Image (cartoon, each protein chain N blue to C red):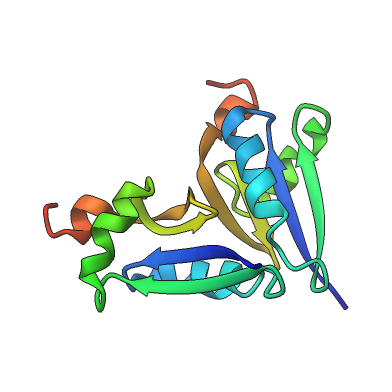
Length: 81
Length: 81
């Protein structure tokens, strides 16, 4: 069974670069990759925060959050900053 | 021909977690992965900085730097901070 890798982003330039370079670098034989854009899926914010996502872009791989560079804080994503 | 992915780290806990989860997630059919530990290869610091590495752990994939979470600044790696 494949592991799950979820890429959370908010459409910013930093996010797009990370998605293109890191997303395509993961092993498709072992990972089901899901891309979540908060612009079109704001209902996924709570789930991302629960997984430990503090900024985007970020990958959650097997439930563990990895922040890639720094695009925007979750506060900015939620319109709080 | 495989592309090159270089993982720079300094042996910290953040680095180890990133190496284990993200390093093994890359597609071995398409990437030659090199792991550089600054503790044992301090001579690679200049090369990493030239590639845009500002903190570790970081991946440089096809020459583009991606900072993963935040373990230590390059200043700390060089003993400046």
